[in-house]
Length: 237
Image 1 (spheres, rainbow, N blue to C red):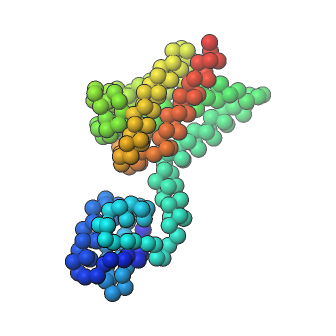
Image 2: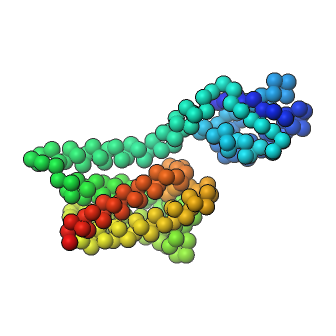
Image 3: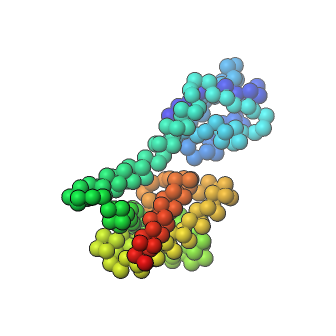
């Protein structure tokens, strides 16, 4: 991905060096070409970097603005490109669990939620187990338990696997739903704390396989599991 920006305040070769050094500090940036005469910079990126982040990265002297692209459109595209793995997983699980309802005469919400949660935990635990150490190291950066007890990160992947299997075979639904409610609630606390601190932290929801930043989509994932397990607790009691 390449974009050209207009930049104010860049007047000499020293300015060019400062601008390049600042932008190369961003891990997404792979190449920077500057032109003092045209007051422009050409930036190559692995994924789109919002112009606000570029501005914050640069020294205050320099003011940057988009020149040859629609920044709003790029942000939208970047969001979908970043979270495409998660969105595809949710789509696949949703479609498959709905199809499982077709042989029935009517749609059973509780059975659908049971199947959805089975698919969710099995798929997400699979990605975590592909690189268990990488997941555990990422998870302890924001989870309230893993910060204090690092081994919890290793345990968590197997807990998700166990919950997925339990939902799949409908084992002790009361106990399983209470466990899910508690585990996901604790996980959500860590996510909320990280987002409120505005730190750039990697989300470990898909383990270390995908480099996903922590965002509101992580809150949606955890909240969805909490709501579903809560509804099923009420239903079974």
